[in-house]
Length: 103
Image 1 (cartoon, one colour):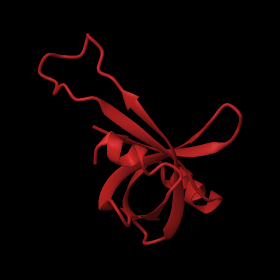
Image 2: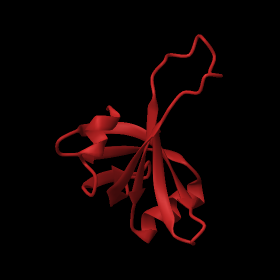
Image 3: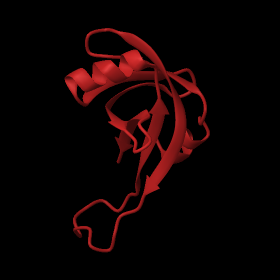
Image 4: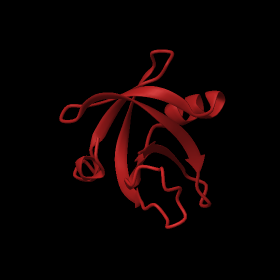
């Protein structure tokens, strides 16, 4: 999945299946590109990664916080299914979000 694929899916719903087979929906709210700095090792593939930030129901947040970050199965009708590593984080304003890092 490329960042351009995800960026056009902003505000869309993704289906998430946790390792214990629980099913949740989460909404994509932001895609951030992370550029490699000049100090990156020479042998590192020169590809900018990106993060996808989602909001989700409290039950998914609780499941992630209890188990920590985890690999989940994610599905979107146009992008298909993938296994991704996600984590739940709390912002300074107290709200929670889910982030997945790609590349």
